[in-house]
Each structure stands twice: as structure tokens, then as C-alpha cells.
Length: 227
Image 1: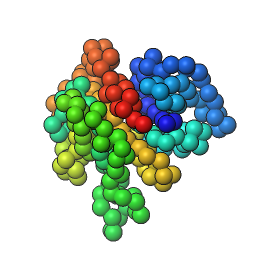
Image 2: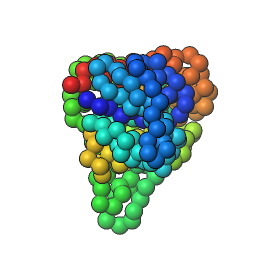
Image 3: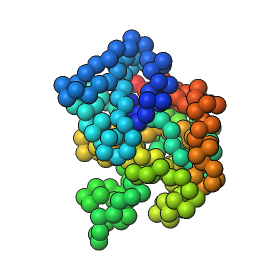
């Protein structure tokens, strides 16, 4: 299977690239730069999109046009919400926007004419690497164009989604594009900070120095079980 992997930041990219064999830079006709390689017997194309919803959506479209992947995985770090702690891995069984409202006839978070929540690829969710891993929590990832850095900001999101497990800035827009393009999708995130704790900026900084090697272990386990 050809798998596209999208990360937002260079820090995430530099942790991911050592996991690839036969790496080489490739340039799409649009000029977007990506890295191709192999992992666990699969052809992989990695794209660093940049942070935020627009960057993520543009990157997802470019990756689909160039690579025609059978699956797109968005991975990297996220803020923890609900019953999550730093270094927990969250697999987004669903993704949704926390900063969208299109008016009457829709629910908060829903783009008119689209699902209120985007479901992850059922094949991935059924893997033993997901279901039987005590270090993985499955649930909702909510996305918006802001770094959630306060308990008040997190409580606003929890008011919309009491079941939210993590917050980020890219999962939902990539899921949105994949839904429109008919490409299976899943988001796999590692919790780097917990906005509800009140000291998440320090947690975020400490995460990168203390535990980067933990970040992509779940990703490798999942890819190894894909057929």
C-alpha cells in the first residue's frame, strides 16, 4: 500500500525521517517538496504541511494529487483533553472542528453539507496495534486555528465536545480533504501538553527534550500491521 504521512512541523519531520528506508526528496509538479521512502514494506510519501488548517488542507491536496495514496496518516503532537496525559497516544476514531459554525441548520463544528465528525479508516481502527495497545486511547480529536494554552480555552472545546481526547490544528482539515477526495484517513497523535493543567507551555517545551523517541512508536506498529 502507498501511504501518505503528513506532519505539521520540522521537529516532527526530523523524528519521522530516520524511520524511513530508501529516502529521497521528491518535488511535485506544483513545487511542493516531499520525501519518499519505505517503511514496513509499504511505499511512504511524507509531507510537512506547516501549522494550521489552511496549510494542512493545501498539503493534503498536494499529497493526494502527487502520490495517489491508499491511506493518509496525520501524525505529530497534540494537546491532551479529557482522560489523557503527556506521552499518551491518541488515535482519532473521529475528528471535528472546534472553531466552525455555519449557522442555522448545522451544529457547531460542522461545515454545511459535510459530516459533523469525520470517521477514521475502519481498517486502521480494527488493527490489534490499535485495539490491544494499552498505551493508545481512541476517541475524538478536535482541531482549530489556535494553540490551546489555557484551561478556559479547553473548557470551551469540552463544552462543544464532552468526549474530546485531544486538540490540534491539522487533523480535521486533513480529514475534510480526504472525505472530499475519497481517501481513507486516520490521525495518530502523541500528547505533548495538557492545557487543563495550567502549565502546558512548560510541558510542551519539556516534551521535546525529554521524550522525542516515544513519538512515533505507535505509528510504526500500526503501519507494520497494514496489508
